[in-house]
Image (spheres, rainbow, N blue to C red):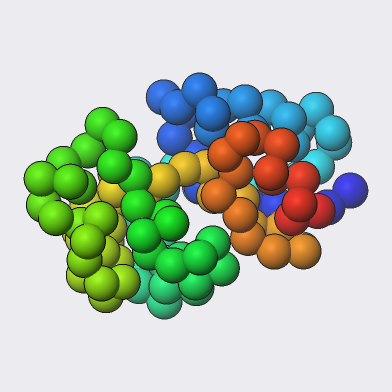
Length: 113
């Protein structure tokens, strides 16, 4: 079975469901609680590029992203905000042998395997 990494927030139902789906299918999953261990700038930039840019990775629901004008900002500004405040990173991100996806819905994670 494939080895995958999930950027996980245990408080998020979609993140929990994605993790369960991967584990039920027998995959070795490395769990990164990105709120406790945020990615570095290079990793964040690589993941953002893979999912369609920083705007695609930006979490607006339950955050102050809109009040900060982030949905209209450039990628560098959004990524800097994410590095300073990782709650702005949408989840779950799944990194597998065939790629990187924002697993919304959870079944999207299977595209990385």
